[in-house]
Amino acid sequence: MSTTNSISDGGNIVEGEAVEEIYAWIDQIQFSRPKRNIARDFSDAVLMAELLKKYYPRYVDVHNYIAGSSIAKKIDNWATLNRKVLSKLDMKLSKEVISQLANSQQGVIEKVLSNLRAKILKDCNADRDSLYFDHEENGRGGKNRDADRLGETVRSLLNPDEIANRTVPRQVFTKLKTELQEKNETIHSLNHKVSHLESLMKLKDQRISDLTAQIINPQESSISSKSHLLGSGLPKSRNSKV
Image 1 (cartoon, one colour):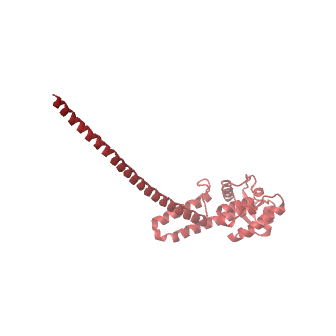
Image 2 (tube, one colour):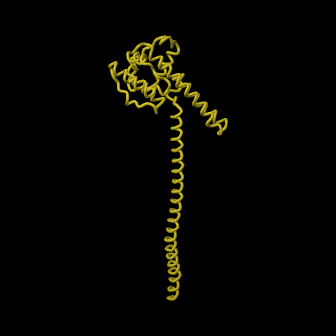
Image 3 (tube, helix red, strand yellow):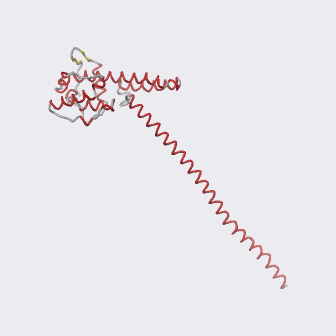
């Protein structure tokens, strides 16, 4: 991906280390096609839709954005993304900026990505504050652990090499937490059923052993009795002959 030392858009400048952080962030994200030149790569809005899908999945349907080479198609994709997604995130773009993006104007996409990155960081901080409130009853230790985990996800965005692909918005966290709880409950229920079945198997094994013993023991007793009678009768018959 090509880089520059400073990016200017309408008097606002993204430069130096901030630019490199944006490129590093984008480089660690997997897209549907390889990245070569950031301005051209994002010009049809497809990669932007994929990026937004990772952080705000409920707002984005990537199938609405089809890759295209014509300026008209690129503008149409950006206009759709602007209306359906960016406006809901308070990041609505002007027609002028959309035209600049579609024409791969240098520096424009970096500014848009910089604003998006700031938005994601802001939402992560809001999620952390919300977790403090939601888990007050769980005690200080639980709150600290939740805050540490969210702090880690925020740092992963600032330093993608530290922890890649782990920053998620609150709705994703809540959904995953609910799914995990449901799966844990299912596992607990299955474990209970397994324990019950194991108990039944033990009872059946014991019953089989008891029945087997009842069948074998009378036979052994009968054989023992016959042997005793035969053993005691033979000497008497011999003595009578003598």
